[in-house]
Length: 234
Image (cartoon, rainbow, N blue to C red; front, side, top):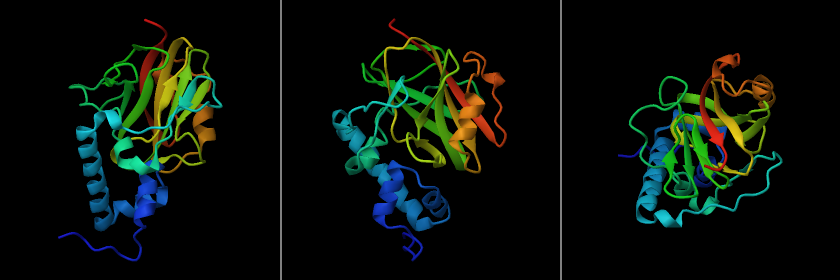
């Protein structure tokens, strides 16, 4: 028997909006509410069914021009929130392929052929679309960023707003990025914390960091996971 909705439960619209842009207050409520946990599981089940039955009909907006020259964020559509969250989510690889222990960060590559999970140092091409799956554990806040060979930092997720994404368990994050023609190594970072960190703190910590040396990064109050990509035409 499903747990009843309480007066403290967010509306269905608020829960749907949380699927698109994670809301820290909603995430905290879901973590302690059996009714909303059931709602979230049902939404995920419906999205998986949609993904199986209509893999070519996944909806996404066109990439818009980013204020950061190297990336164009993908914005999810509210009408297909659950389905959009499963776009570019193939079966995970058999073994972890990241620079940190455990399956904390996976970068999925699509847009020019079958979606796949990136390996460390994988070569990517202009026009490739990236999505980010994280598994930070319960009650986490996550920023996704990238650092190029010059040490320049780009903010990838959330693309807008002042707070990081609130993540419970494992989640394919809304949005993504489309690669332009810039070449060279690029390191994708997931910055994970128990309390929300400001983007300014994350950006300052990553700014100028050596792209091929992830061990050089330490952010007080946070842990990190990272994947290295090699940008250019194969």
